[in-house]
Each structure stands twice: as structure tokens, then as C-alpha cells.
Amino acid sequence: MDIRVTGVVIEDDRILLLDQDTGTGRSWSLPGGKVEEAEPLADALVREMREETGADVEVGRLLYVCDHIRGGVHVLHITFEARRVGGTVGVVAGTADSRPIRGVEFVRLADLVPLGFGERFVGLARAGFPGAGSYMGAKSNIGL
Image (cartoon, rainbow, N blue to C red; front, side, top):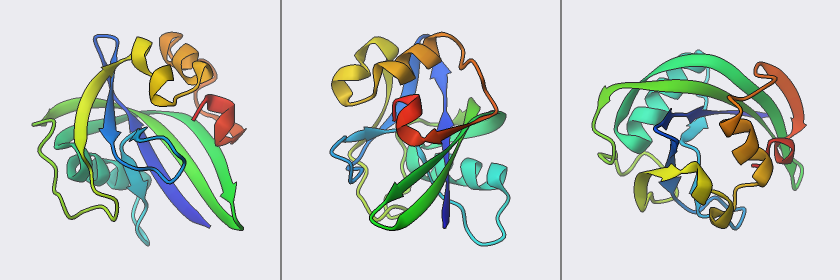
């Protein structure tokens, strides 16, 4: 099983996203990535956010834990709230990901559904992520 951390940074009703092929047909996604061997989750998220977005973040509360099982591969997704504390959004390490990052943007929550995010995810974000800290089952249960 692989473990993947993702970060939700929301500022002024906008969420920080990557324009990057996801392998799911959606080209926009939450920043994050695979946790390295013996790497604490918070350290992994800080590293991934810096590599993929240029932002330095402080890890906040645990939002959701979800499973993504596809083709016999099980990935445990752990999503945290994060707060930007520095860095420059859009300055990407470049070679950090196997899938090239085309862009990094703060996208309006109202614009997420046309980008392939579920209404469920938008509703959770607008409501301040009720049930934060919960195991949610399949990743699709939170609209991702």
C-alpha cells in the first residue's frame, strides 16, 4: 500500500491547485504526493507543497482519510488543511514529479466542478470540512 498526503490551502474562497495530469481524466488536483519511507506525514506534506507549488505551509488539522483502490493498487489518501506561511506560489521545483506540472493557481471554489471536482467536495470546502478527522472510505465519497 502506498500512502499519499494532500494539502488544502484556501484563501479568499479560492483553493490552491495544480494543473497536472492525474491519470483519472481530471487535469487539476490538490497538491501533494507520496510519503517517503520513514517520513512523518507533516514533513511529507510540507516537502510536497514546496516542491509542487512553491508555497511554504504549516500543516493544520487532519481533514479526511480515504482509500483509492484501482487495478489492484491501494493508495491511502490523507488530506490535511494547510496554511501558507511563505514561499512564492508558482515557483515549482520542476523535476520533482513524474507528471509535469503545467501551472499552480488559486482557483475559485465556484469553478471547481467544471474542472472535474465533485459537488460534494465543493460543499465540504464551503462548510469548513464537517466531519474533519474522519475515515471516509472511497476517495469519491469526498468528491475527489
